[in-house]
Amino acid sequence: MAAENIVTIRNLTKLYRQGEIDVTALNNVSLDIAAAEFLALMGPSGSGKSTLLHIIAGVDRPTSGECRVQDVDVTRLNESQLADWRNQNVGFIFQTFNLIPVLTAAENVELPLLLTQLNRSQRRKQVATALELVGLSDRAHHLPRQLSGGQEQRVAIARALVTDPKLIVADEPTGNLDSHSAQEVLGVLQSLRQDAGKTIIMVTHDPKAAAFGTRQIHLEKGELS
Image: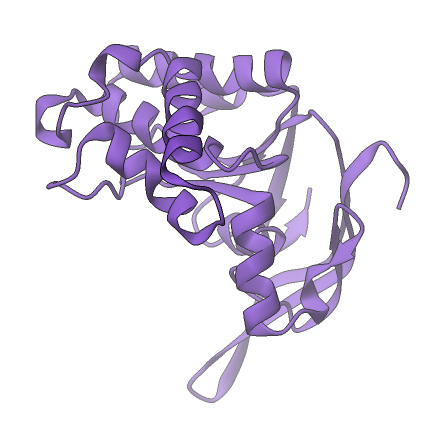
């Protein structure tokens, strides 16, 4: 893999079985994603964009082809190796914020660190850094119900960041937000690329959201168009 690419995909195909027929989610896709790129994956529903995102993130497996992330072919890892790899290398942001209602913002952000060897003091330091990066240091002890939707999503971004992954994957991260909150969240993602050198891959239907990226690619019926 070339040094400047964080993701290298070759001839990726994904088939799903529905009853008696195979449905092609991805058809022979090849793609390079550069380090510190903000890539917007666009396309209609059912075009395969979320499937592609999930394979890159090690959540789903292809039927055939190669997907190398930081020079690791994630398609060849077993489930245990894949779980370890995901926790160390990928931050996830979802359309639904997936925060635990009874935990504070700081406690939600800390969750991925509980799977690491860090002690309590080290975890708290990383949580504080992540919340500062998304501009929510003053909301650390608030519960999700005490936050706006945009603030909840920024907590979710901090949780994705807290293990300091190189790669952040976001599946429709502004889908549940009003336009002002969406702009705030996209601005945070943009600054993470510019200031912290993170690579961001975002699935979106929204051309305004995609415009925050450094590159846009379109999927149509499982193929790059």
